[in-house]
Image (cartoon, rainbow, N blue to C red; front, side, top):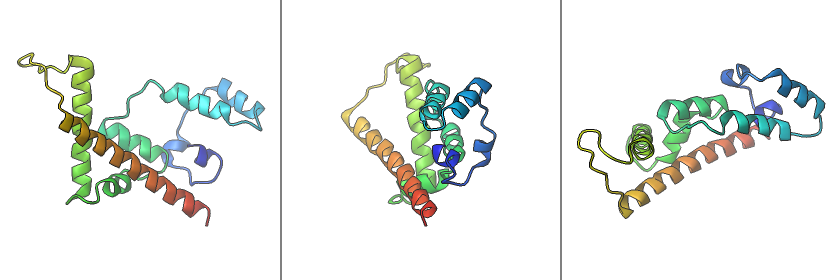
Length: 148
């Protein structure tokens, strides 16, 4: 978002609709040499929210001008139908996160706790790493495009 704010990236529709309290607008106008107020605003606004659901992740990436489809397709490019594979991984990660966080990792039907295996952890660490790297690569492409 700061790249958009600074005029280095094109502004997305979601960026243009982002609401800022007037107190923060005044703080930003007064802080002409500092960007700390901007990052504090974003951290306070987004710090407690979870963006692991497919829809939330798509919305957040679109807000900062990074195409969800591009990032996820790139993240899982070695898989056939990389976009669908990536969507499925994200949905699975979010579902399991909710089960762990809200259900003590237990099935509603049987109350049996699900085992977390080393293989499961390694598989999903690899998936998260791929997602982060895909997003990062698209962001770097945006930076390179804005510098040309």
